[in-house]
Length: 356
Image (tube, rainbow, N blue to C red; front, side, top):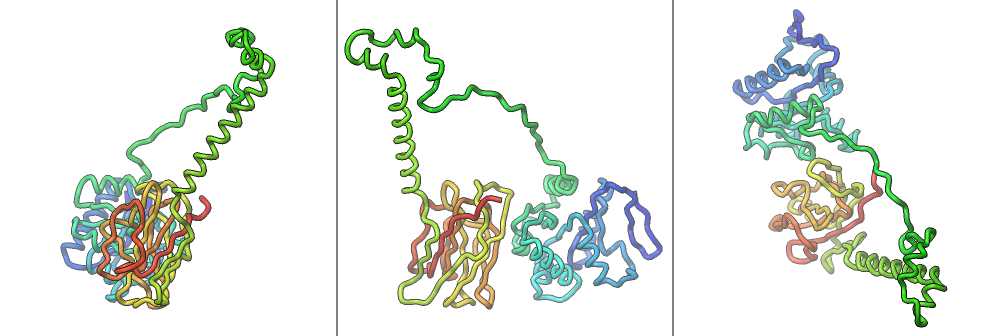
C-alpha cells in the first residue's frame, strides 16, 4: 500500500517492504512507459519501488534526491539501453549520468563486492549495453515472465530451490594402515598360515606388518601429490615479447575458489609499454581448465590512459591476464594458455589469493 503527497512523492506504508529504485534514461515516451509499468508491477507485488516519475519538484532538488534514492535503497534496478550506457560512462550528460557517477563511486567503495545493483533490459538486444561495472552480477530480461520472476526473487530474497542440511553422521574412526590394530582379532590371526617362516613372522610382528602398510600408503600419497604439482598450471609467471619493453601485471588478485555461475570478484592490473589505444586485456580463470572472463560474448577489457585496467571474473584457483592486439580472438576455454607471440604481446599468471 502507498499514498501520494502533494508534491507527487510516493511513500511506502509497508514497514517490511523491500525498497528499490530504478535508475534509467529518458530515451523516449515508450521507455518512460516501460519503466513506469515495471515499477507499478513491483509495487503491486509488495516491493517499495520508486522512480522519478513519482516526483514533481523534490524539495532538496534533483541531485540530492537522486543521491538519496541510490544510497538509501536496498536495491538499485538499472534499466540498460544504449543511451543509458553512454550516460553511465560519462559520454553524454543528463540525469542518468549523475546516477551512474553515484553508482560507480559506491561500487568503488565496495571494491565491486555488492549485490545491490541489478541490471535489467527490456529486450535481448540491450544486453550489449550493460555497463562493464555491472556485468559481474545477475542480469534480468524483464520483457519475459521468467526474467521478471528472477528479478522479483532477487528483490524478495526467494531462491528457486532451498535445501535443508541434515544431521552429521557419526562414523567409526581409524588411522590409515592401522585400522583394528588396537582390537587385534585372534581368530583372524589364526586364518594366516600356521606353518613356515612367513606365518611365524606375521604372528610375532603384527606391528611391523601394520607399519609397513602405513609406509606404503604414505609413499603412494607422495607420488600422487608429486604428479599433481607436476601438472599444476604455472603461477606467478610473466612473459613478454623479446626485445620490447611491454609488460602486464595483476595488482588486485581475486581469492581462490572452485568457481560457479553466480560469484564474481574484481580483478585489476597495470600495463606498460603498449599502445593503450589499440591494446586490450584478456582475463582467464583456471579450475579444471582455463575459462575466458567475465563472459564469452564480452571477453576484452579496455586499458585506461594511465595503463591500469579492471574487470570482473568468476572464481578460480589461478588467474591469467593477456595483453593482446585487437585482432586477437580468445578461446572460450583452453587446456593451456596461448604463448607470447603474434597478437599476444605479454601475459602474466598468478595463484589466487587466500580464500575469504
